[in-house]
Image (cartoon, rainbow, N blue to C red; front, side, top):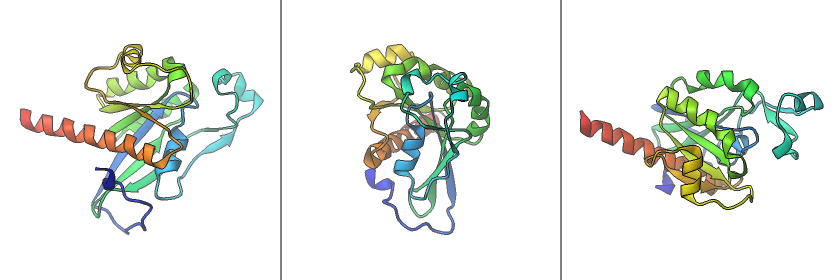
Length: 199
């Protein structure tokens, strides 16, 4: 399945199916980094320099080395095959931009919830919104070198259902980010097949 996502190949002028995926999560968990690492095009991003004025609004205690932040969304693209492409939308993580999420969710097939295991509580809103919309998702734990947690501890902390895939990743690494997206696509295919058998 790894070959389903091509290496940075030239883009075709058309694709029959554009499949929209959203990457959500808390502030500073690596959403922009994941889109950058895996996109076959130069990603569109809306990064702005963080200022002292933002410190009063955004909790920067756990991300004190962060110097820029997404203020609208990130966008990338990955060709799956001659007829299908994935469009990746990275949502802003700060609470003041959460109002954008519902609009980003329109037309989305599924989502990746990117989490920093040092700050699991920052992921609750993302999971709550996805469940509210009935949108399939997976959870990817981005490696920030924090304390090790077992899969069961993470599932309990996030109140994740057993059928929701949980994977580890390094958003800076292209192959690791590809694995996250492959896991999501496989999950979506499994859910689609399950719905087909019930009809």
